[in-house]
Length: 307
Image (tube, one colour):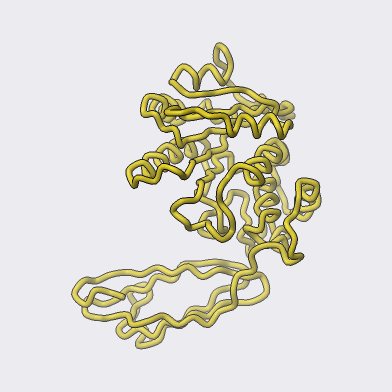
């Protein structure tokens, strides 16, 4: 409801489905879409498979009584009614046949993503907006095939969307988009942003008094060439951000090294850190769940070198 005396804007997001368009009706007096008067009813037709914003601005003395929606729901989760297991990931990956898949980036993260979503992260398709959920930020956003496969396996998105990966009408782009997919916390792009955003998320949770949710961010070893990450590392340790967890996928693709390896960089800034085999699920689970009171946690998962 708009304040009768204060201009306001309400933004609704409509979810796509691959086989139908969406029509939304808003019985609002004096409603405007993009500053164009639309009378008492505003409708918007969405193209197939595409999610878009509809911004409705309420005039200074209008009151929004209700919103009516006549639209099909977005198909989320697996239609088979069962949760996929790790062995099913190969099949899910094979469904994505779009161009330019950044294969090494996708395969290097697969095992770590699975262990996190299967055994560690406290978030589900039903709790993607819950304040108490764990947050997972994918900073290594290029080559998101593994991430999409895991999200489909865990019911965050319908596996029927996977064959459309990378196509114009698909919500599965070459970088995940938080406005298009449930469970995606950030829209990735240029490397070096995920860890600073994770630091901000941990600070935000602390400011709100939410001490239980954990923040996880996955970065690549080459991202540590970015100064923004070093600033985040240097800040988080002394700040005692115990809710912050950083997973570094090390496939030997970095241009620069450091004495003592990646772990030493985090430890020098006051982090709890260790290196594990990025293909050993039990070793990763133990590292992901190790206690680290009062300190942020970093786990470096080593996988085969990128070729």
